[in-house]
Image (cartoon, rainbow, N blue to C red):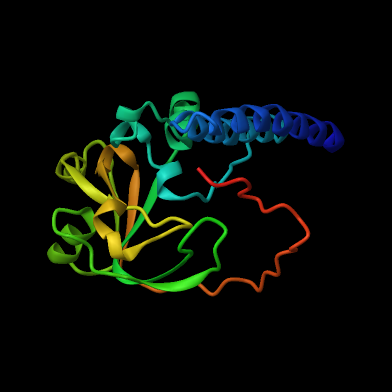
Length: 218
């Protein structure tokens, strides 16, 4: 049975990889959509394989897991995993959880395929979710956006929400913020006032293999 699943998923990878590389040549949002659609297709195959009582936890970047319809991504024709999973499985108890920090340090690279390094995470800018939470509480906190919670209405206002990805440039900090209606983007939001870069496992890339981001990352 597992061999059948492996065959299905490998076939799916081959099919969507072709779509992805074709989309990369267009330099628009289509390559992003192909990737996130593939993630959800893979999830659906795994959910079908396992017992219907099973539960799944997906760990992803905020940009993938927070509902794109609550950000300016929607204006560019982009969707993401959070949006698609809500649309397809809302009745199954989908919960989208976001993360954010006011300041600290992160592990990232200066360019695609670049070496990992610890970078300073500067204090969040004025008009951002992270700055607001720092000024009004300044403590680590979990916000839950239930329909009857006053937080649901408070965080419907569009505010900048910092996105720190694999590639990060703290010197152009304003460009790292995604306008978001936080309580529509997530079902819950975990705020850490100060964060610290993780200690990664010791990875040794094989220089004889084609890099995963070849020819470039989009």
